[in-house]
Length: 347
Image (cartoon, rainbow, N blue to C red; front, side, top):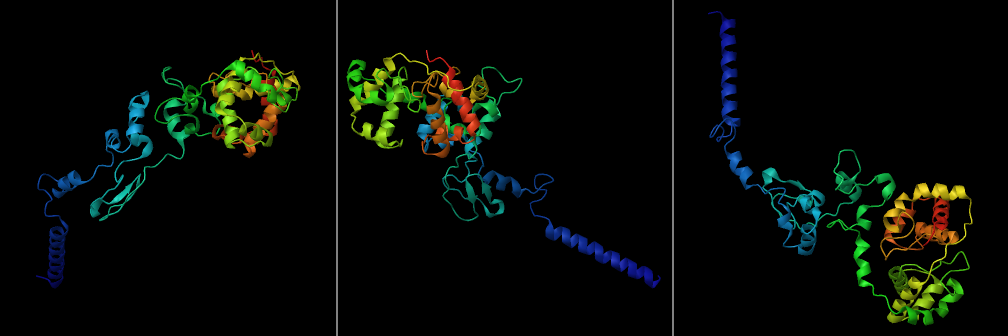
């Protein structure tokens, strides 16, 4: 046999031997045990900790939130949809072969690591998955036009994430108004700025007549605790008892409001009407709030509304809802909104 043929056969034999050796060396012993896959993988996958554990897993530690969530229509949304996979929360351990990252934190091989439940940083992206208005969605499912609903404001600033209601809705139930007759006697100290009948003669000070009593009580409490900052109002509120505040709220709420005369051009009010859609959820489509813990704006002094919005925008007047709404408003926007609400009838 020619030598070149012998060499070729030897090379082929070496390659075949190397291939057989490599197959034996690199093939897992459990391969083919149950089929054309690695048999040990079945037990490893079965022993691996599931990434998602279901909402019932959260109940033992987060009972209050779980009860609130399960009592509303949001119960169809699993907790992990918003808060991430439960693996590793509050502590987790994964085999080294399959160690990875859970949405609650790093689950490292061979160690346990306490991790906190994540709070979604952008609730708008989550809530609009179901609530952004679009054709074909059932009318029974509350829908919003994102651009005009609340601007860049996060949903959880106004809404309870575990139950589909506004956060401040229940606050009115805790406010008890006092005696309007007693409040009338105590209101003489307020008349210099807000008028004897609650209608301010100075456009930079608000008229209080016909305003929600619950809102007025909350505002006076805020001045008393210095959550709202105003040198004059803080000094006045510090001298008021709880009974005084409740009585004053009842008194001004019982008075008949009087709309301020328009001070700006009609074009500004018309432009403000188009921009006021984002305000309607809290302050009402006609400037009369459906919720008594939020103020009526209809017929209020234009100059006062301008100053209030600018104060929210700069942060000198603090409120998480209003801060988000006002931060994107220009001076022109503020002027037009104020003109619109001032032009409305407060009755």
